[in-house]
Amino acid sequence: MSVDQLFYSAAGALAQAGLSRTKLANARLRLFKQGITPSWQTTLAELQAEQCDFDGYTAGGIDTGTWSAPTYGPGQSAVINAGLVTFVCTAGPGGNGNVVGGFYLVTTDDILWLVGQFADGFPMQVAGQGLPVALALAFGTG
Image 1 (cartoon, one colour):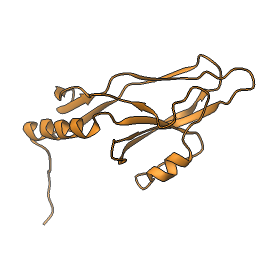
Image 2: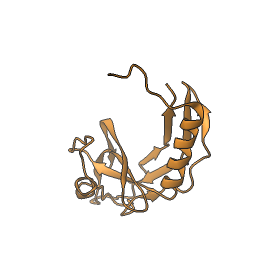
Image 3: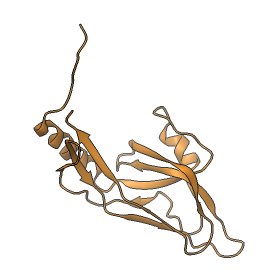
């Protein structure tokens, strides 16, 4: 027998968001270089091998801190948000720069939680270039 519908209840969606909020506390947002095409099978080791290293990049990424409490967002979803995380390049003439292919989020116990790939690479090659990333995760009810 197949199932026609499967969805979280409103309370279940809020609970899932709350569990994720707890797990993602102090997760680190990292960047990877353009040239890798991640999939659901991509490993943390593969992304770490391609982690950005432009001048000004913090090895290991930036701590996302505490995520927001779950709220209902648009489209019948429970949503949690991380604060704005901004990466800044400090490369001067002859310095080290990268073209960023995307980002990935790693929990404090080294679980690769999610990966985002940019449609086009984002250059981080000149002092003062910045890449702001705001994460909002939705847990749908239907």
